[in-house]
Length: 378
Image 1 (cartoon, rainbow, N blue to C red):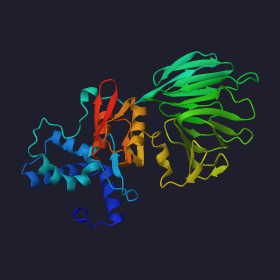
Image 2: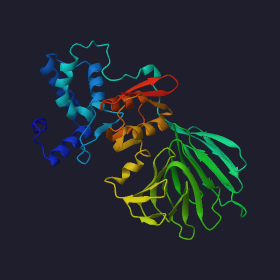
Image 3: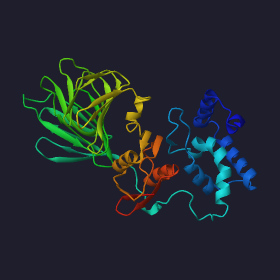
């Protein structure tokens, strides 16, 4: 720890220190260390709990060797101070110096008033059946719907199709999530689909033809069951993604500048390019396709694991993701710096004010207003 504070740690020593902090085994020792530093700086035996939480809510950044230019954010819903304590060593002194005149009633963090706080999204969607009727879905209760020779079961935030269907005519269903919603789907062939917020998937009730073709708007993660006799194809805007059997993510939101296909396992073909595991294809509106190999391809499916994951993302990119998950409108005041960058991950189970408080550490400023509006301040 002394070597860290002196700026003399090697990369291996830094990684070891981070692992120690994250393990949770040293929580009490770290809490005591914070109080010891506080006492040495301020002469007070113990930092008040409210001050400790406010301070550590704001100091949750940990260094990333591969993203030095961006603001770093690592924030979990539990043990805020444990994840932040390493940087607390060097920040407590400056915090004390800048806040000695601040009264206890003044918040250190949020400009966003708690009264306007917004809860995170949840498992919810609508299912449009082939006859046009609409079924509302959520994570509670059980339900069985019959569609021809196929049974549709809803349970625990997942929709599952079983059966082979009847006849040669394809009947289609559409699963759609609202802003602030997500849902899981098990297609008739066993392919698993995780649908992100503000997304929709149109698919046959049974795959009876020579291909398995679905239509996606928004974002989804697929784990496709291999069937060489029936290739799996995804229609995304004017682009078709062809799959045999693989795990991959497709981000095709209308408001995003490109359709992004990220391959974790197997192989997919995007236009005339075949992706290998770890590669990502970006297709812009003019049809230009570029293939890269990001540092961590798993970042693309962070949302499925319950996290916002940003890597050198600018402010509008960050806020678009937040807007979809919390179902809010984003308003930018004049002179806001949209070019500041963010890297790291934030737990998607946090309330909106907690997420914005975390981002506020990077000098971005926010205010939550009535009618689910977030104002970005210069």
